[in-house]
Image (tube, rainbow, N blue to C red; front, side, top):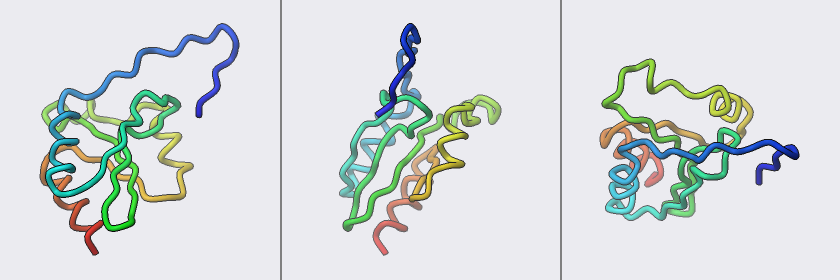
Length: 104
């Protein structure tokens, strides 16, 4: 849970335009999906579960310019400090690769 200082306002969390497509793809492959994009503090967009394994997943829109897909400062800080499984997916190929990894 992210606590904010008094008077600090949290911006509304924006999901990448391909988030619904990526979530649907994970579910099509039998994964459970928990939305996390509104947690804030750089927390990844979703948690994906398969075969008793869980991965945190940041979704970026692969259709955008590379510079527009970069992690925000908060996301980078979270990625640098997280000690568990954490992945970035941009397209269906990334989803398939992650699912294959969770299937092992």
